[in-house]
Amino acid sequence: MATLSGVRTAQWTLGALVAATIAGGFSGAAGAQVDHNEAADVASVDETGSAQFEQPAEALASAQRDTPNPRSAVIISDSAMAGIRWNGALDGFRGFEADDRLESCRRLVAASCNGREGYRPYTALTEIQLLDPAQPTDVLVIAVGYNDWHVGFGWQSRAVLDAARAKGFTYVAWVTYRELVGYELPSDSDIDVSNYAYMNAELRNIVASGAYPELHLWDLNAYTLGVSGWFTSDGVHELWRGSWGVADWISRHMAAIDGRPCPMPWTPTFPQDQTCPNPDPLPAFRGYPDLSGLYGL
Image (cartoon, rainbow, N blue to C red; front, top):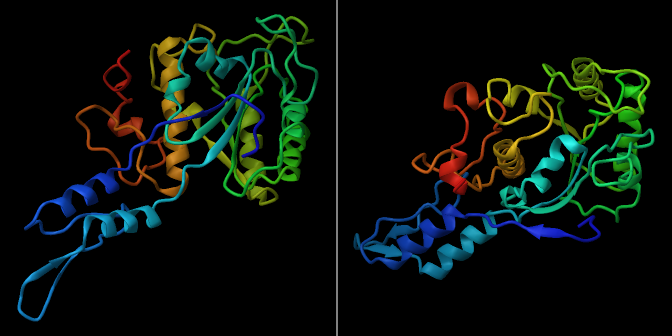
């Protein structure tokens, strides 16, 4: 794990394991689903026509072999996502080990500004350079850029990607920027606003070039397009509910990488996805997760 300290191990659910254990514990059961990717019959029939069942321990071991271990993720952000820390929503990171580095006023490469907590955080580039080498399944999440001018974003984003590659990250998730916002850059900037649509387009150009196959875009801009009550009036900084919503969204993306079960259902009454889908397009036909029902907000 490419971390220093403050790693939080999130709780996660293995629906397939529970199903396999319950099914193996009842005589006369017809079998159990032990893997979310394919059906696995735990019952067979001998030459007399009698059903022969695997022992519960065997079914459990089979499910354990087929379920990948939880991944670890280093999450580097500016104040737009630091609300997850400030608003007490770190417990929304579930199903993976989160090393959260969520700081106010962080920039990509240029010197960070003085944040609300009274210091200048490391730039994203420096933060990555200070990490330990990544393990093969480690994920790097980049949620930095709202304090940067779009001019120069192309080379700065590539500098960050080069640093991530040098550390051995084979999966880099870059969170897209919300575009329809009124955010003004910090007072130490020479300009007032940046063009986040331009920055998102540049990220897509990088993906299309094939130069960084480790780069994956997690489209927060699309996911939150129709949401209400998640962000302040500037459209960037999170309200309390938005912090839980974004933490939930990150957790679903982490599960979707390996097709593991979603760490939470969409609502308390919605069947839990045993193969977690990419959450970005889901609000168009599911609406948004029931944060109150899921997390007791």
